[in-house]
Image 1 (cartoon, rainbow, N blue to C red):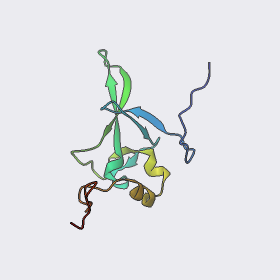
Image 2 (image 1 turned 120 degrees about the vertical axis):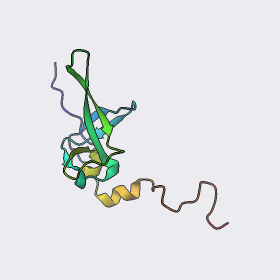
Image 3 (image 1 turned 45 degrees about the horizontal axis):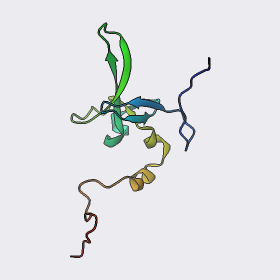
Image 4 (image 1 turned 90 degrees about the vertical axis):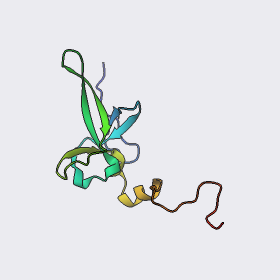
Length: 111
């Protein structure tokens, strides 16, 4: 028998929580909860307990906070990546939103 510890981030060495999502994927979350006003919208998650027929919590699923915005003081669980990198590096590494002026692949903007 061995001791089971949370996995660690390969970049910063911090402990992370790997949780299943409500759409059959996995996400690496931070171990802390932060107020919603401190976490950008795309990094907000909540942990929802799954209960069996006997109302006993059997597992936890990560659900992305979307649709209804939480109040600024509501606690959310951020994606670990948000805490691992400086915010400038995250913005550069992620794809741009729908409002950005990008040409579709294979086409130039100078037609």
